[in-house]
Image 1 (tube, rainbow, N blue to C red):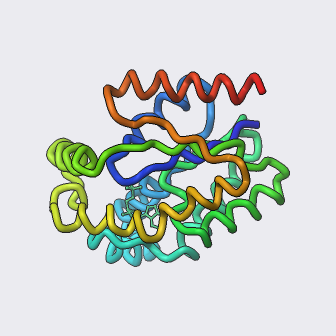
Image 2 (image 1 turned 180 degrees about the vertical axis):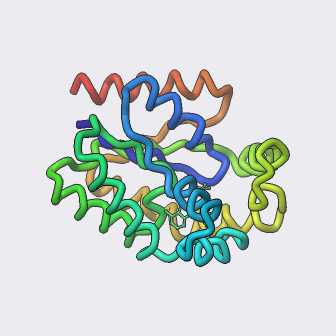
Length: 193
Ligand code: AMP
């Protein structure tokens, strides 16, 4: 089983590259951002709670996202592997994920960490906001806050996965297909190991 954490700051291209990896390796995509937007669209109590945080570019509480991932892992016991996209985002979430996977005896294979320069992140997010209409991608203050939250709460996960020997840095600058090519080389190497 191949379980990948696709990691990187907001705007690094996680969602786009997750689609490529799913098509190429038939993995199951788990994006907490997509799941949360689904809850908002369905106007569930969980969605309403999450929205207040998302609109400000803050993280939704750990218990909420961990609960969502736990139930998704349970409903897909036959998956060939998972791509975690936008999750984990805190050390607490990473520990919870390790525990959940331990119960299923299918640990994380690697963390693929997309590395992108700050100004390029802002450009990509602003560009995406125009196309998607996502409120948190349109306001420069919220974008800066999300990148700041990433630096303070999420970037420490690089050390967490480095300590497990699972961190792999990937150059996330360049075209979508160039970055996809780098990811494919890396995943093919993991599969041969
Ligand atoms: P994303 O689509 O991954 O950029 O996520 C959009 C927003 O959803 C984030 O800015 C957070 O408010 C929230 N969110 C998504 N995933 C998580 C997570 N793993 N932990 C906490 N908040 C999250």
